[in-house]
Amino acid sequence: MGYQTTTEKMNAIFSDLSKDYLIYAPKRFVGDGTFTSIDTIRYGEITDLAEIEFAEKSDYSFKEVLLPISETLFYFTENEMKEADAPKKGAIVFLRSCDLHGLKRMDTIYLENGAVDTYYKRLRDHTKFILMGCENSFENCFCVSMGTQQSKDYDAYLKVDGDTVLVDSRWDYLDTALTDATPAPVIADSVTTNDTVVTIPETVPQTLFDAPFWEEYGNRCIACGRCNFVCPTCTCFTMQDIFYTDNGKAGERRRVWASCHVDGYTDMAGGHAFRNDKGQRMRFKVLHKVNDYKRRFGTHMCIGCGRCDDVCPEYISFANCINKLNTLVNDAAKEEN
Amino acid sequence: MTELNPYIPFLSEITEVIKHTEIEYTFRMTFNGDVKPGQFFEVSLPKFGEAPISVSGIGDGTVDLTIRKVGKVTDEIFENYVGDTLFLRGPYGNGFDIANYKGKEILLVAGGTGLSPVKGIVDYFSAHPEDCKGFTLLVGFKSPKDMLFKKDFEIWKKNINVIMTVDYPDEEYDGNCGLVTQYIPELMIKGLTDAVGIVVGPPIMMKCTISDLLAKGFKEENLWISQERKMCCGIGKCGHCKIDDTYICLDGPVFNYTKGKFLKD
Image (cartoon, rainbow over all chains, first blue to last red; front, side, top):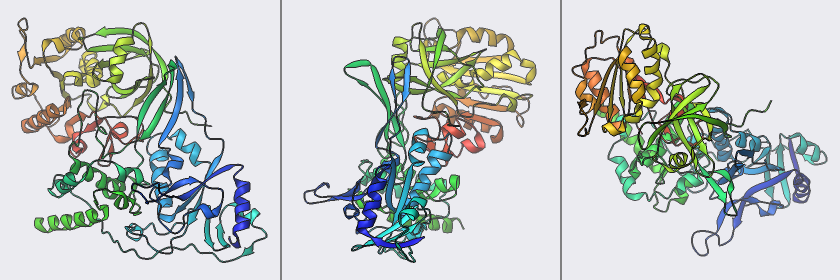
């Protein structure tokens, strides 16, 4: 149900909620970017709506709330193992429509593909999602091409306009808390066009896996993995055991984010590795995002946020790559006919 | 009901250690539960990590894990196994389904430790030769020093056709030499349209063997392979073993060649 209220009232509600929830939203970290005077917008805890960066796209996605960069799975001493405790509080996450679609991709991998992931589920079950609207498309966004510009799967939509807050609630708690607020029709802001448009090839034949097309990326990519780390749908991890220097018999097993672009991703004991060429790693990632994931799960993995294009230090554009790939696929099909 | 945490390993006792070579031992581990040849366990060594190891034998209340000392985890297992226990997770993966091969003429080609995941199949048909039309084991090792399962070979030789070859013979060795593919042309296969070929080994060996078997007349749908990849989780999450739309840990590691031929890393 829709309401009109004030920032003061809303902050009071969030203050109450903070007893049970940590509230995460994109925040501006001044001067924290790669270069001097460059800010970073990434997720952090907030206590006031004023802290939220609504005007710009976040450089990083919300995924670290549900899939921490480094997450302890269990502690071990000799033959004992103890599952790491879940956080005491749940989480409230502010995010945009594309990212909310990204959540579904994470759910697919962590809840449906094979066994249910204990650690993901216990965070996910206690997380509420608040949609932030998009009045305009940002640079490199192509959500419309991916069909992710709107989402209904939120617990609440929230828009701040000066001292006024518009809320569309699907969360009983908020409905109760906003009983005194003015009912209002609230429709989430969403874009209908992006400057960046991608056309995804229906199928990519395996004969194009080794096409010279990928070599260009092999020459440019420096295998830093940034595109993976900013992507809300990249969910790979590597296990890592650490032990305590004060007591070598005790330690913990963690999982940490992994990147299919970075060396070592496929290394097996004995030293054999697959996809040593960086162009082939690009092919592997690109086709996962817009080809093979869909074949397995029914939707494309990529949600069109464009963060990979924003972050690439080599100015590699994923969107351009898809469009060029589409041309390549069409040309190859024509040649065959 | 809360689901079991799939990441927490269980303790398994080492009941026996069979030393094949300097760097390859079979650890017989206590395990009660369903398991198939070709499935794998994550062997877990706190402080050092986990390594996916395929099942090389299935006993009453035990599984055999043949481990080669080639990495961080396996080095440590060799250092510290004495009279001890290991943590395991699994079994994972689809494994080989013996029923697919019953009543058929079977050619099993294995290279080195590639014999481990298929050893359960050899054990089965060696014990039940009447369950198939014929069984040939063609296996290659690098050198006589690298031979695995020597005692098992003595038993197998009595019940099935065994061809063993080594790439690099030494002074005392008087058996077959050369790559496994050298021995494919001379193999007598009676009914090529129905004969089953199972091929497991290093990537290049599998590629050449498959190509030779197809040339010989084996049908694609009668060929089976098992793939080896890095697997951190074994349960379709970590992503390391994914090839195209296939998760080796969930959909494999065993594939019919009609599917397996499309697996391009």
